[in-house]
Image 1: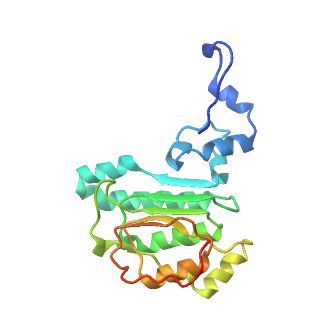
Image 2: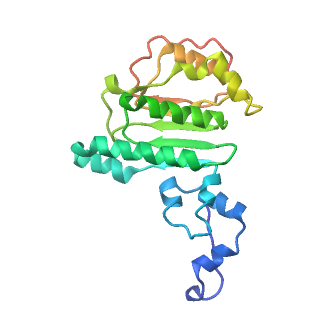
Image 3: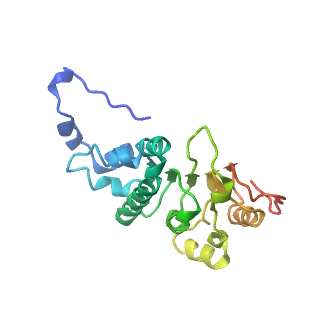
Length: 218
């Protein structure tokens, strides 16, 4: 959490003037504590380009997700808008690495192409924490037959080599997968690619039957 305190009479300062005295690095660090939606909606003209350099990409849109629950007929339109929004951010993002890449919206296997591209984008920038929360809401479960299936191709040899060309480290693992189907083979490939894995949480996945961990973990 970041706190900013101002000395003197609180009515005597202008937030934009205060912001103008901060370095870009400080502002970028501050933006890393916000969701992308908040970071891009409350910025002065000087700051608007800086979110493109943040290493924390949090695509949370609970407001739109709640609207879908109340009006299911809006689901397709809302999903398309969400996908286009994430894609636009990816096109403008220019930091060489990402610490966190968080997707939080009601999506399923119909959005396979877009979600797979997001995962590849995050891993190509050596993401440290990848979270896919595709649940309809935080209290319930989706129809697991419609869940997005985590693509095993992410972990094939050719892909791992291409990722290493961008970084000294092997691609990291997802930390949280909600309403994402992951089979036994994919889990095995995940473990091979990230033997230093510390935490992995999987919710509402119907494809795991007999998971065998054959590599030594940290």
